[in-house]
Image 1 (tube, rainbow, N blue to C red):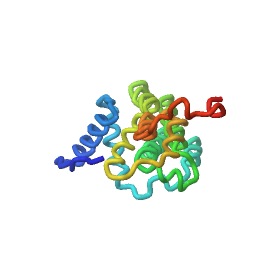
Image 2 (image 1 turned 120 degrees about the vertical axis):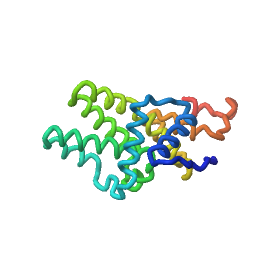
Image 3 (image 1 turned 90 degrees about the vertical axis):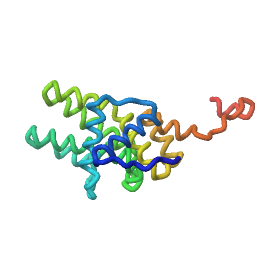
Image 4 (image 1 turned 180 degrees about the horizontal axis):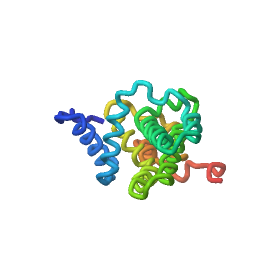
Length: 190
């Protein structure tokens, strides 16, 4: 896949342009709030070389003893890091001997927890983030593939099976040759 060089004036415009390109490729449209959240999350964490140096589950558990405002901030960081790891750095899951869906589940859970514990106007954004987590991950994986090869087929199969990722499904079926019914034996059909 070839991708045009992005020559936008600001960092915000560059990220926004990448997200728009990915939306077009994934055939989806984020609303302005989700798009903005994703842009600023990318900007906030791209300078962080220590992204998810700790196990997410431990970080998540540690939040339960914190005061509410600190807990919300930590949960937001966990959700955001899980989104970036599952979308841009899925190979880190393999290095940690977990599936990419581990990050998906942790991120969704963090965003849901926030939506249950903040004022209604903010809660809606985090509820949407939790519900659209896989779509956002798919967009980030599309951005990743502008410069990095796609996931391996087994990773795509796991991700599609675990999360319903349309991007992973598309990668699995890209270039696939369907088998004719007569080539499938009776054992396979059971």
